[in-house]
Length: 364
Picture (cartoon, rainbow, N blue to C red):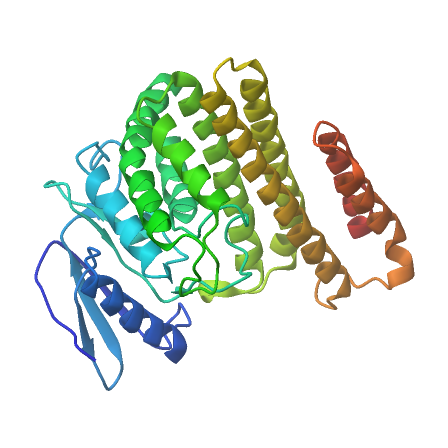
């Protein structure tokens, strides 16, 4: 295993078995995927691996993004999107591109660290709808960009920033167009077949993002609000389960369910916003773009609804939380069915009804 040591600004350490419960498998991912990513041209801090005990030292060229002290600017976007594209075509799913794992340097460089939860994309893996080629962009948007946008002081600042982000993404989507065109109909490393639908969707995004409108930026902002709230709910659940050194917490596990469902309500708002933009568009390309965005929103709303019902069910099956036999959970199952059967314009009310029944059952 080839490793190198460099000397830059911010320094971080990681030990196996520390309070973050780092495992040997995570260490393997940390080193192996980071090395692979660096070999293909992704900016990754170079690791110095010490044994006895196992310790990873790495130093980064940049710092974590901060709107006041280390803002993300358009000079960072070329490197950012190049990193994402290289990961995509190399079949690497980083899976944890949150703010603390992305570093932005004054010269425009952007580094990604923390590959310990990463993997290679696999066929049928929940990542993106089947009409999208796997990518790392959604993970970056939900875990990094969404939280950076929250730091901005007003909506207009967010809109202007996101228009620059969308414009820079056009080149990323165009490169993906070229990649799919060269391999159309073929099976890539993940086992996924690249389809004409994937190609057309990338073309739509590449064209629309060349000259992004305020409406496109506002729609992306709504998507980021959805992503940030979903991520916070997921973190609450994860911490409640004792992840990353946290103590098990029944309260966090309980509270994660309504938080998750409230995040899904933002997803429904996003779908509605995208559909309205599609309906009022008198341009075919615009209509296709907004319809595509609405369909992506529907995919994630449906996916997260399946997750949250499983999480709630798990709470009622766990002796440490709120054990209840199956026959006492019929009202919850019925309320969940109402959500799934409702059209998207009616799901919000059905979700609110489910939350009420869930909390009643928890407190009974």
